[in-house]
Length: 93
Image (cartoon, rainbow, N blue to C red; front, side, top):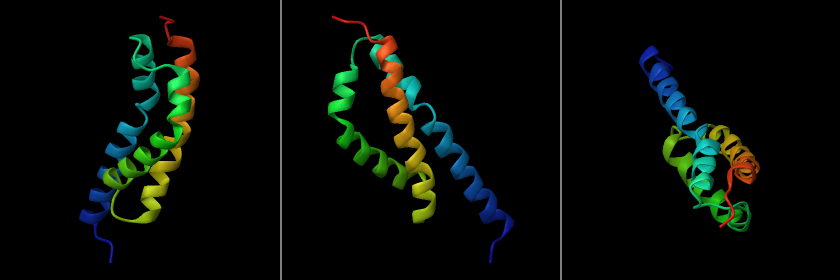
């Protein structure tokens, strides 16, 4: 049975998880601005990033597969969007 306490606990976890998740393009743009991440590097490490995103989604989301997928799919999309942002902010050495 769903209680008010469990509902608000679930809602709180999801709000924090999605709040952290939607910062990904900004973090990638910042790393590009200071010269750490390049678009080529991010494209090469796409598989590693996908695995890390899945692990982070497992850790941040409540312990069910649906919540993990609801968090992981937008994170993967935001990673790809971050690569596009990096092209605009990256400074050539």
